[in-house]
Amino acid sequence: MKRILLTLFACVTIFMGHAQSTTPSTPSNPTKLEFEVKIYTPVVTKPRPKAPAKLPTSPDATLSENILTFLDSHAEYTLYIIDEEGEEVYEVFIPENTSTITLPLNLSGEYELQLVRGEYCFYTYVEL
Image (cartoon, rainbow, N blue to C red; front, side):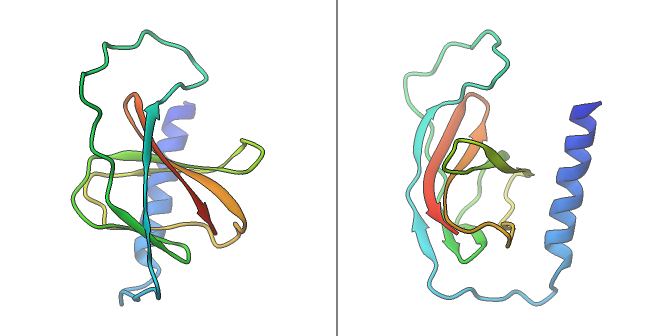
């Protein structure tokens, strides 16, 4: 039931993000994000598949104010924003090849931005 509610929330969030403006705005001074990769370890432990010899390529993205823009095609991700205390403050599902995501305006300060796909977590630190 929780998974259904999370999926529904993610869909509504994405729909509202796309429905906010029909005219794309060009954020000023986008910052290129440099992601690192680590093995994602969720709270619930489950058997891990054997890791491939080569790590996956990290996504190519920029951040300008609260707009996260992917510069090329990508797989689906779950985006987590983690505050300085290690608490998750935001989570949203990002479908494959989505070009932009609007991050919450109420967040300010330093955060860890995580893009999780399967057992891999691409992460970087951002100032919002």
